[in-house]
Length: 185
Image 1 (tube, one colour):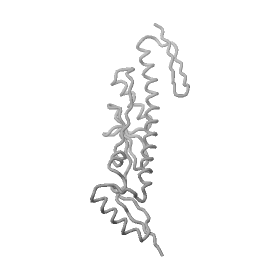
Image 2: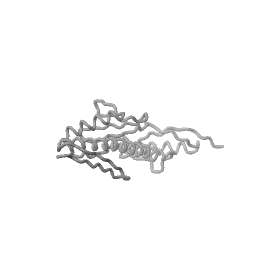
Image 3: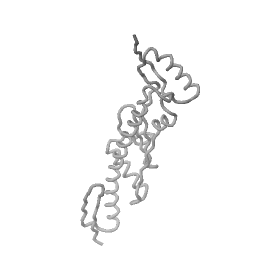
Image 4: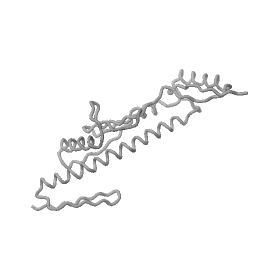
């Protein structure tokens, strides 16, 4: 009769070095249009991100995220660094007959610095990559929404520098946003 046991496998034999690095330091870059001088655009962006719930820290502007995930935006470089917590080991269930074989496979992989080819619990890598993708989508949406507001405000400010604004109308058609400004010269 077989018994099933839970064993802990070190993450370094389940996840490749490349994947571990990407989970710990994935970066998103955002463009910043030159509607106004760069310093003014960055100032407006920082203010709006804080209003949107970002926290100002020494590392940058931190987006609220679930525990174990981080998203830090740097307005100077327009770059957001994302990371998710990678556990040190992963629990899997093994039948008693397979434990010795698995321990031998783990020792070989650790000695060679490689990843197990047919790792039990290999869904861990896909699950963690999926978490990073979800975090990246949320982070991009949050920053893009703020950028849209910053651009709207910057365009109005720029128009005010050209003359007296007599009318402002906005329309949104799917992914296109239009602002029409009439200026009395």
